[in-house]
Every structure is written in C-alpha cells, then in structure tokens.
Length: 459
Image (spheres, rainbow, N blue to C red):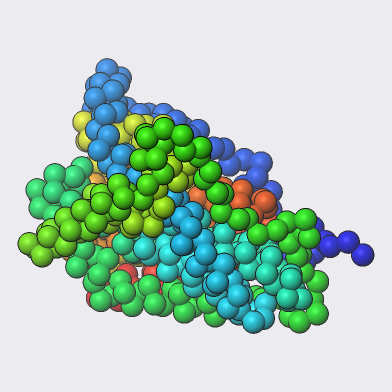
C-alpha cells in the first residue's frame, strides 16, 4: 500500500473538522504579502481621509515623503534574513545539523527535539531559525527512515516552523532592537530616548515567558504526536539528505588564488570580533547593527574562502527581494499616519478601552491581528509601534511592555499567517495545509503563555 498524502487522514484530528475551513480559506483567499501591503496602504489612506482633517493632497504628500523613511531599517532587516540564511548553510552548521539529526531515538522525541532546536536558533536570529528548522526536519526524516523509525513528516516540519514562535523575544527581535537604537523611527514616540534591551529582550519576565512558551509547546507536541502504529506520512524514499553544495571554482589566475584563500575572510572576521569586544567593553549596547555585525563575523570565521561566501550569498539573496519591495510601502503607511494625525486617533481609541493592567493583553491581540496584514515584524513595528507607544504613554504604562506586546503579537499569529512559512515549506516540499493543523496548536499554547506574561507584568 502506498504512503498516504500528507494532507489526508494521517494529519491527526487537529487538521480535520474545524481546521478544514481555515485551510481552505487561507489557500483560496489570502493573497501575497505584497498585495497585503498595497491594500493596507489604500485602507490607511481612506481612514486618514475619514477620521482626520487631512485632504487627499496631504495624504499623498505624507505617503510620498514617507516612502524613503525606513531605508536604513530596511537594510538592517534584509541583512538579518540574508546573514541568517548564509549562516545556516555554512559547512560547520550543516555538519552540526547532520549530527543533531542522529540524536532522537524515537519519533515522539524527534518532534519535540526539532521544535526545541528551531526555537533556540530563532532566539539567536530569526533568519537562522527558519532555515535550521526546515533543514533539521528534513535531515531527521531521512535518517529516521534509514534507521527504521516511522516519523510523520508534516508534523516534523510543523515543529520546525513552530520554533519561529519565539523569534521576537530573542537576540534579533526587530522591535526591541529598534527601540534600543538611537535615532530610530521609534525615537520620537519614546521622547528621544531609547529602551535598552535589558528592559525588553533580556528582562526577567521575558526570559520566563520564553521558557514558558518552549515548555508548553514542547508538551503539546508530545500530546499530538501520532501513537505507535498509527498511519504516518513518511518522507518519500526518493528524497535523500540535502548535501552542502561544494564550491569548486577553477583556480587559474593569481586573483583566483586570492579568492580561494581563507586568509582574507579570516582577517576581516577577526577584525569584526575585536571591534565587537571593544564596543561592549566600552559600554556599547545591543542594536540592530551590532546584531548583524556579530553574525557577519561568525560567517566570515566559518566559511572556507571568499568563493564560498559569494556562492552562499547568491543562494540567500533570493529570499530578501520581498522585504526590499515591501518596506517602502510600510514606510509610506507610517508617513500617512504621522502627517495626518491618524496615529493619535488609533492610540486614543485603544486608551479609551484599556487600562494599565489590560493594556498589554489588548496590545498583544491587536498586534496579532495586524500581523495578518503586515507579516513582517519590522514592517509591523513601523506601522503599529508608534501607536502603541503613544497609547502606553497616555496610560502611564512602561514602554517596554508596549514594545514586547507588539513583538509577541507579531510572532504569535505567524503560526497561522503563511508568509514566513514559505521558505520552510519550499525546503520540505509541503503546502501550508499540511502543517496548519499542528501550528494552530502552537498558536493556542503560546498565546496563552504570552498573554499571561503580559498580564502578570502589568499588575
């Protein structure tokens, strides 16, 4: 009997019944992220005309002037994704993943293990977490098949993608890092000040929330794992381990010999390490730029030569295109909201229904909703960050709570929003409907933990 399709009856109860309409709706009616950005621009423009005194000309000027407002931020976000993808595909990291794939001794532990590794990688950098989760799921599926262990591949991939649910709590969280960066687009909303990462990413309550999400979601994967003997969709026998592509450039000229030498990348990598050590020794803080330079330093130390780095960069660059195209639109939206006063209208509306205790949870829910329309965490902060910070200021709420509430909401509904799942699904060869039944479980479990954390810290 042939192996069942991943979207058939083997997908467990979570993907049946109530999830079928959700799957069908997402596949048929959710457009591309670029279309979302365009539609959201039109919606915000109309709302500005209706809810403020601005005329059409002022709206258009605010939009046009704002298009270039996030160019530095756009570059920083693109670099995080680019460098994360490159890092995940360096030789040492790929070898490490192959070794890690041999750790799980049974299928149930494999699902939890993939989620745990992907979550830790996402806390390091979200670009790394996305790629590592998919690559590890594929590698474990191949090795498990060779060892006679039956694993349900869609659940394995869902576990890898679910690790992404903690990315905005970690080292590359764009919202907290932007708030910690001097002269960022959030500076005006913060009164010209910054919010250090010790009050957001590295705060005690955020650390406990990370632990809570990982523990709860790990237990949920134990509960939804197929029982021994239950039908599963195994990775087809035709699919083997994806080996690291060997870079075999012809070395003929003296210039080729330089490009094939490790000395240059090693020198620059060590120089970056020295710079980072001096930066932190002199009391420098963690910003988006420092995060990117730390990953670049690691990459330069791991690659064998410039030839390999060029090759990995070409492979990773295709994932950056949509960010480069969408961020000017998000900047234009922010320009409309700032020039017309729409930010104040929205923040006043939130203040009218919230109080200092309920603000964090309400901000989480609203950010989760906005994430469906602005699936980029950085883009969402450009649109929603100033609103939430203004509302928090009016209510006397610590800005760190507003920053992390938007961060939590962004990562939370990524479990339902298919945008960031696309690179994972491409590596795995699956569709969103194949994993959605399982990522909904992650959505529910993590949402409870994050809402509870925000409620308790607001007391």
